[in-house]
Amino acid sequence: MRVAILGAAGHGKVVADAAMAMHGTTVVGFLDDDPALTGRTVMGLPVLGTIPLWQDFAVDAVVAAIGDNQRRREVVIRERARNAALATIVHPTAVVSHHAKVGPGTAVLAGAIINADADVGENVIVNTGAIVEHDCVIESHVHIAPGGCLAGGVRVGEGSFLGIGCRILPGRSIGRWCIVGAGAVVIRDVEDHSTVAGVPAGNLR
Image (cartoon, rainbow, N blue to C red):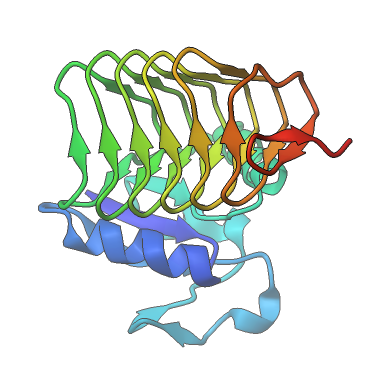
């Protein structure tokens, strides 16, 4: 499978590295909406042009490698409307249960774990060393930052960002488009569009 990486910044490097480590996957290069990057080389791969130009190259699928959830969602919606197929990237050192579901366009990065009967949606980032335990439901466009740990039965709504090293207790629910701060320990459900931080996590807004 020939894959183009949409986004040539830091997160794009990590996703490209994971894709290059996958058996049977060839990364043809990056595309980025910053035209100043066109023609440069990142990790030995060319920046081929701006994102809409992926159609000009012989690719089977693309993956949006953009850390910002709202921006990544916008790019995926736009390019799917232009018939882009979404690649699912799983680093060889990640552990994904055969009984888990992982949606298209999702990146599961080095050392991450997704356990039995977890359901991970489209265009999600399960970042380095993150853990998604059994029976979790992760809706589309979520980013679980490095080292985030979700205990069994956690539900995370669309577009939420879970900060580095956070801990979510079993059965808790994180609403849509929330932010969970780095190192936070979530012991209660979090309402849509909330920002929480601390131990235990409390509302900032």
